[in-house]
Length: 197
Image 1: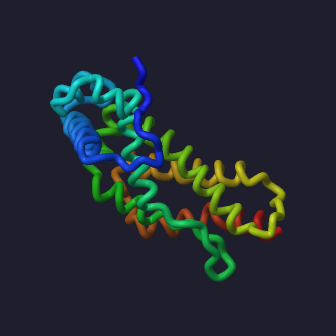
Image 2: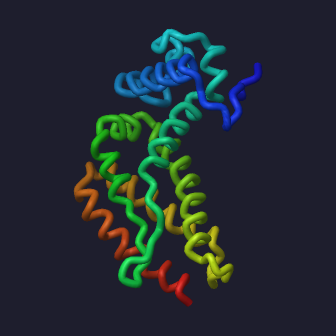
């Protein structure tokens, strides 16, 4: 069975496609609140959304694809570029932590049910790609830092992923603003020094 989406990336989804995707997403979210993510099947999602399996596979490869596709859209909407402020490189992360805090029931259910690892792996990959683009844009003169840009991006994204997981596991002991400040203090001075060398 062909499980690849039939729409090209340049084609805006029609209303029927949007409705199907929304129904599948809402069905998955509802199921995550009721049972462990690991125990949820594609058939469970289709039954809850009242759509056929062929419709599911028209849009998604599997349940992980459904989960991460929607997470990636959220991350894109929250993304803020790297920027220099007072000579210090800043990567704002408070919006991400505010989003997680605002949807804490979902993220706690994912942590309990085994789906958070799927999200964080996808998140780290996406953050690495975004950060790499930001760093290349900052170094628009074409110079190469002493540490390769993909390594810098992976380091920042890995630090963010680890911090986010720690924060969720410990029931969000600090505000998003405080976490953001600590992240800037711990992670960004070294990156600033590398890029300024």
